[in-house]
Length: 64
Image 1: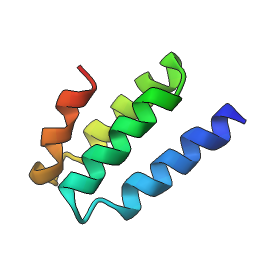
Image 2: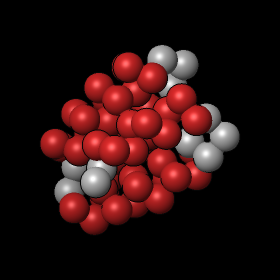
Image 3: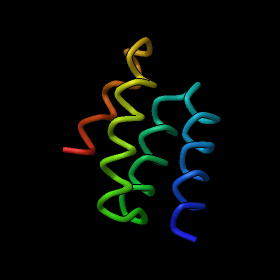
Image 4: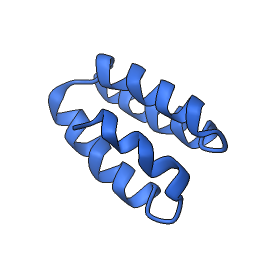
């Protein structure tokens, strides 16, 4: 089930990426739910996803 939650998180983040406030909010929720190794995977995904979206890069502060 944990893997399903990770995949769901990626889907939600992609869908709300039009709004940086929503993106940060959903990222915060994900960080509370996901397992430590999934957070590492999410960090890698986020770096790639936000590479050409500077407005979303601000949300990376939540991970640190």
